[in-house]
Length: 206
Image (cartoon, rainbow, N blue to C red):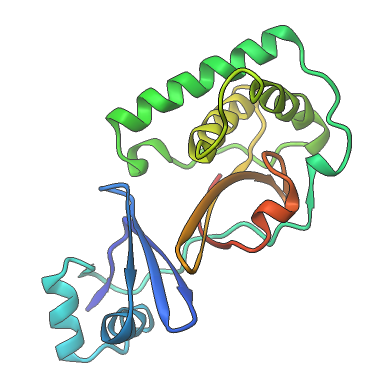
């Protein structure tokens, strides 16, 4: 019995499958027969020929089917919809330092090693606001373009330090684009709602 590798996360978008390999920190796209074979493997209905191709391309592993990983709910609101208030100088410094640490981690470790689940329960949204405000203010001191993963890893770490659980979400769309953000329940903390709402979640880590 075979199943998709447990270190792969995937999102089915129409006839295609977007995959993220957490071990190599690499995205790839399956189309046509490859996508059909992979989708069949997720359902446990792959033929011998499909399984042979999937094994040859290291997309499946031995084992019984496992439940699909939990995904965050569709975002409905954003902390950016309201005034976030101000952030203390110390919280700003912490946000900048945490982003520096996140960059170092990404340069040295795989996403699978960095994005480990925590045992924290979901944080109170009001208590998360000051951390979100610090990251908004940090944009003035560091270019935030194409830094969504760094920013999200750093914000998740800061919230966890305060005992606040949050969801780090990676979403994708086609033509291929990926974005990472932080959610608490259905509320986005790290971005305006219109920036993330069209992405289809691929991975969620609490």
